[in-house]
Length: 278
Image (tube, rainbow, N blue to C red; front, side, top):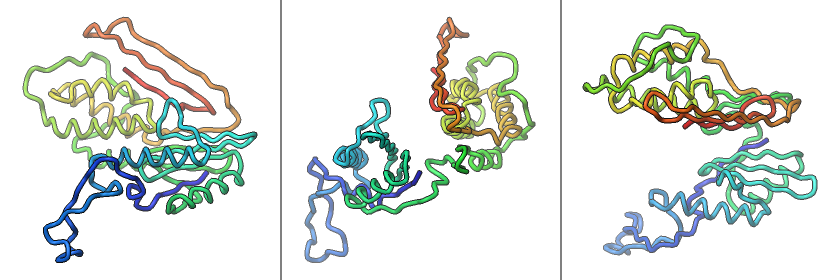
């Protein structure tokens, strides 16, 4: 496994639309009062990210990869016994292959296309910390959780469950410190989507009241934060000893407001690899 960072990634991407910019000050006075037409997707243009994705997809296809049908940022190379999987998020990426030789071959091929800085040992990507001892892979967000707990402005009491008994109802009165509530929910949603599926349901329930949180919603948020304090070190642990894939799907017949709640989890290599809640 290796990680990489593409230097000035967007500037490799051709731009299709006619976009003009004022000439930089360094080129004055020769171009005073004139504009310049962009040939590449300059950082800050609204279509830059789309242009880079189009360029990177074309590049990966040229290198023999296929774009995943379920994840547009994931590319897969299969030839004979060789398998290489590449995930690209903006200008950062991670490479996994079934042999060191195949990964090194990809490195050389990619470096012929773009300027790349490589990381031999991948320890972090997209806020997820990775510990790989050769036998098992651990993915966690302990540092982010620690930061969340430090920033939380209300008293925290350790809890064993994500939610207390009782139902949450909509409050018609003015919300209590709505901005802080929304900020906390946003952080918790990122944490739950990264490696903490155990808080996903509770976060989604609390997020329903983000526009107008009442005292009861704040108390529920305190309870969930207390759960994170007690169980801050939970993480995903993957091992090659168990490659079976298990899938669970469930749905309610109707909740408090006559709306169904559904969800699924997919488990492989000893832990979860995909999940969702609606």
